Image (tube, rainbow, N blue to C red; front, side, top):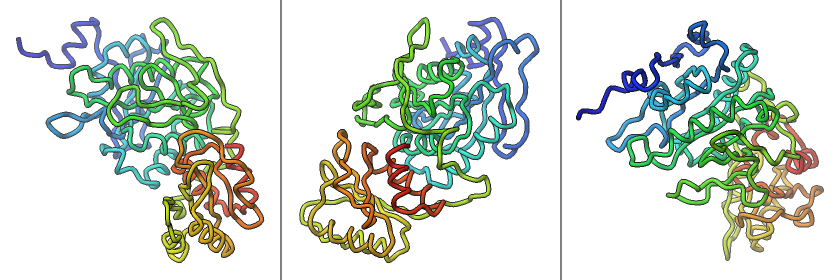
Length: 361
């Protein structure tokens, strides 16, 4: 029997038309199409589609955000869904310019539409951590922003994208999700953008918050939260970005290794890096050559942040020296420390202030 066309399948199962409102990328400032009046009692959620495996197909190409939503008819029971196309790329192609545009768009939506319950961002998993943490530091609202993705493409057997999208929307409309910062929801788990890490290239349970644990879970009958963050974010962040900003400062990550002579770190400093993150050994310890280079570069006024390649364990303050411009990432991994440093460099923060931000955000 031929497979039914998606919209007809939704009608056949639910007896009502789809309530998806699509907003064209070319008209980002335009208001979304509203659902019929009889549906207005349900909360409204904006889905911003950026691409990634969740939209991918085995034959190539990517589904639109509207197609992703129409494939999950259960969403009509949870919220009125509005869809906006932001990009259609794999997350390995995401750049800081994308972060700025996405943050600015989400802030516009949440500022201009006080009745919007929350925002979902569909995103690839390769750089989801960086995008999520950037939004965690720059979105100025207590309303939920939830990142969802998948490890299996949309045409795969047992694709996990539809379930993750449904779980993400359920979290976004739950009153408990307010004020918890940007959330990452996959595999029925709710993670903080600050703590979550991708740990496996293939498994659907790849996203974990191993050191501090999940914030909550998505059960069949309800959303359960069991933890809140002590660090600053969103409305309490010191790192929000003015809407006029169009680019971020250059902040590279340099990996340490046995026998490193520090030449790569020195080269980045001569190329105009505003700060540098060193992916050091466990506990932030570095090879002698890297440590000498870090000391020299920091003495020239370029802050150097020591982060660890080991997934868990806070770097002790004694590893750094604020007076010498060598700072420590604490429990932030190198790629998230870089996100914070880019924002701090944008604001012209000094070494002591940057260390305070690393400790509190």
